[in-house]
Amino acid sequence: MALLVVTACHSTNSAHHDSCRTLAVDSGWYGDNRDRIDAMIKQLGSCGKTRDTAPLALFDWDNTMIRNDIGHATFYWVVRNSKVRQPKDWSATSPFLAPRAAAALAAACGSLAPPGEPLPTDRDTGCADELVSIYSNGQTRSGETAFTGFNHRRFKPVDAWLLQLLAGWTDADITQFASAARQENIDAPQGAEQTVGSTRQTAWVRYYQQMRDLVGTLQANGFDVRVISASPELVVRVWAADVGIPADRVMGVLSEHDGDVVTPRLATCGGEPSMPFNEGKRCRVNQQVLGIQGAAAFAPAPEARRQVFAAGDSDGDATFVPDATALRLVLNRNQIELMCRAYADSDGRWLINPTFIDPLPPSPPYPCATQGFDEPDGGQAALRGPDGRVVPDQQDRVH
Image (cartoon, rainbow, N blue to C red; front, side, top):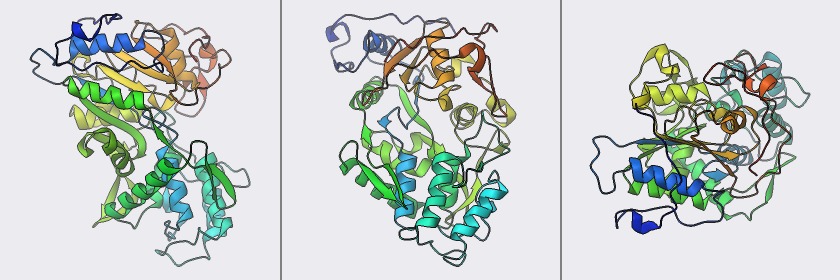
């Protein structure tokens, strides 16, 4: 694929074909980010020209399309409304749940309901607090590590666990739960908190208007816009519909079914149980969108077939965002690996923007040369750029 250089476009909308949509003028866009995205859309989009295939644009969801996390919002609603069913064995809820975490859950929740029946987490704070601690912190209330033995570049067990805890419910049930949680979090005032068990948790979510506009502008110019998220696909579908992204353009955590009910057994990608997290996002896109099967789905697709645009905010996006061939938009949430890649900007295609709601303060320098790469075993190492050289530490300049 020929090198695409997308430079800032400072012309007015009249430079486009009259019917071409461009991004709304908005002070939330940093520097020339809006102009550069408009220039990419003009160059690659279908407005005023014929395209054989639609260019692919991929978006992470949580804290990229919205502020806060819809997986968390749904989990807290599920616990507050007693929708977690008692499993026969807590260790069956995740292949990575540590024995001590399974024992802690059994001690806190095991006597409250027979297997298959909902746990009374709306009123039993001990069970609710154990669930919240493991989901929110990755630790039991006593401080034991909750999940072990997973590839940290392909999996995030706490995010997958929400769908696994909903085993026994149907897709329609889970969609209803997600819809109720969405309404509560949209209706709540910005900054609101809620009580879950005996803990206080975030209780609000907001769409980024700028990202809503970006999605609509891309779609209006013939781009194939899709979401790739580490939240359950059924949950993301509920939220994505409001920005005009249809269900068949949403990719999230999936599980196998027994009949019409969800099970804790996750779907596979690349020949292994998988979820869309970091390298798992690349795998899912390659498998589902590009038809690349088996272990090859974890490798970069041929450049000419890859997404032209990608947007993310976290280290869980540190593989699929760099795969984009034209522009890569990062919302700055002080995530080390992603921000090291973005600030290094090895090919001039990275755009960095503060979050559109509650932007974070400047981060200390990012330790790219020592801690910029998340190892599969959970350790950290030096981040290397496309040329194999160690990426030097980077200053946080966009906030």
